[in-house]
Image (cartoon, rainbow over all chains, first blue to last red; front, side, top):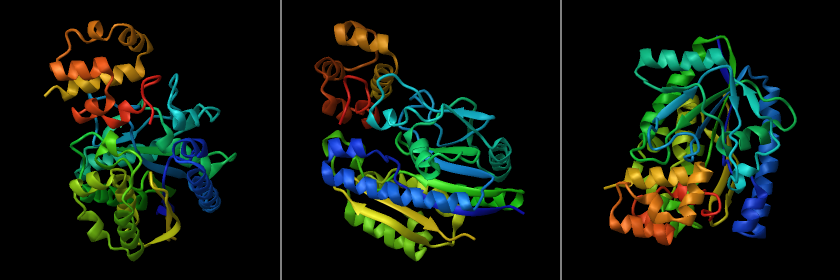
Length: 281
Length: 71
């Protein structure tokens, strides 16, 4: 019988230069502190010796175009490539130098996809989507020089309306937990992104976050109040700039009823940064 | 609403360097034939990113177009 042996969520722009430029020295210092915490979390994750690492993250219009935006998508196949784009923006340029190709856990990915169809989850499948900073910045920070476990990338549409509901994301996480429980593998699961930034996806509001909303979310996560999290509306997430909390909702579903332990929380102004772990063993 | 066309053009500006160069040289010619309102065309020509965002242009595209984006 398989089990989830490690679960965590963290902000995914782990790029000191980006925050140094756009926020200043205190932004750089804050994200450097977060990076130290995530590196320590990686030691815990790898000590659990997972057979696979499910990474739940979003696409920043790097992979999917407006021609087709899946609500949720499982990356299948044997390998996945790092996104390469000429003149990429800062936090994707930070991926330069990382390995160009990563092994996938093909059997677990296929099982999440195929059992999903049986259980009412019509996930999209991609054989070719590459990974941007939302996936590789946390994975590379967690693993450092050590090889990453075979990945199962899982995309949630966080930015192109209409978005999946928080409750639906939670249900998708419950599905992943059932697949893991019925399989033979020890699995780590992480979700990335957040906390609040880019409220209303408005260019005029770039540079602001919603710390009151984020403090509330942290309290709910610590308390394990998953019903309150499932009840969050798309409007609330959009207005506060918490679109990427949808990634976290999948993870929360996968580990429910576990409560989160806060490893890092920082209010930067432009974004609120966080890293959390769930006790699942 | 031509939100789809606005974002298709923004996506091409991000991903297609040759298209981006043609746009920078002659934006009206590049936009000819696209299903855009006059207001949308003018926002592209002026490269008024806030207005494009207000008209439905994706924030994540607007901030990530090489040599035109940035935040």
